Image (cartoon, rainbow, N blue to C red):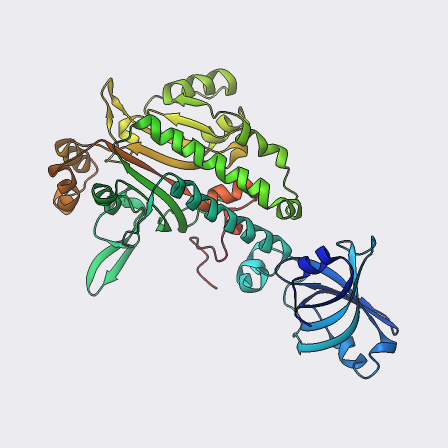
Length: 430
C-alpha cells in the first residue's frame, strides 16, 4: 500500500491504511501492545494483537520511544484513543530500534538545550516550528502582494549600524570585520534600483543579555521603501502583524491548542486598530496609570515596555523618540529636532519590541554629525553617503524580529523555543 501521513489516515477515518513514523509512547501486556505513533502531521494509537504477530512479538516487545516503524492496518474511530482514532495493525516492518531515549519527564532548560537536536521531536517544538513556517510564509506574502522584491545584503560588514557595543568582531582573512546587526546600510542602496524591497535573513547582536527575550543570532524580516513617509511605515508594520496573526489563526489552530495558547488574546490584534502614541504621551500614561516617572530623554527599558503593554490588548506603536537614544540614520522631526521620525511596536503581554523603524535621514552633514557623536569614523560610510549624493529621495524602513513575533503568538516563556537551535551568550552547541 502507498504510505500516507497520520493526519491523512485520520481524515480517511475507516478502512485500510499504511503509515510510518516513530514511537511516541508505548505500553502493553502479553496479549496486546499499544503504540502511539507520531509523524510530522500528528499522532495515532496503534494496536498490536499477539495472535497476529507471534513470530515478531519479541521484537515488538522491544520497541521503545523513538524506534522507527512502517505499518499497515485498519483505522477506526475510538474516543478513548489520544486523537480519537486507532489503527488495528496487520503488518509491521521495524526500521530501527532506538536506544534508551535521553529525554524523560525530568525536564530542565540545560538538559533540553544540550539535547536540542532530539527535543525538536517533541509535540511542543513541532507545533512551534509549524507556526514559524506559517509566519515566514505570511511575511513574504504580505510584501509580495504590495509589489516588493526580495533582496539580500552581506553578513560581513566593516561598520556598525545599531551601536558598536553589540557588534560581533570576526577575523576576515586577517582584517577585522563585523557580523551584520541589520541589512539596512546595504539595503538603502537597493531602493534606488528596485524601490520596494524586503528580506528575511539572520542578524547578529552581541548583547550581553541572559533574558528570556534575547538571542545573539536571530531572523530579521526587514523592509525598505522609496518615496514613502513615516505614516506609511507605521501602517505597513501594523498591516504586516495583523496579516501574520490572522494567517496563524486560520492555519494553526491545532498547533496553538497543543501549546495551550489562548487565542482570545490574539484575536484583538486582527480586529482592532493599534494605538499610536508619542514618546511624550507614553511618559504621561506611565506616570498616571503605572506610577512610573521616567526622565525625558531616557529610552524605554523592558520594565516600561512591559508596563505599557499591560494597558492594551493589541500591539502599541510608540513614535517620536528622543534623537539621542536612537540610531544615527533616523530622520529628525522638522517640527522638533530633539526627536526623530522613528517608531517601535511593543507587543502585548510583556513580549517587548516587535518592530523598530524610521524614516531615514537624507542630509549627509547630519549623518556625519550623528556618527561622530557616537565615536564612529564617517569615512567608513562613504558608500552609504553616495546614496544621498546621487538622486536622494524620501525613504524609510523597519525591521521585525521573527522570533519575538513567534514567541508572542505562541505564548512562549522563552524566545529560545521560537527557533530550532538558539544562540545566546551561554548557548552555542549543538
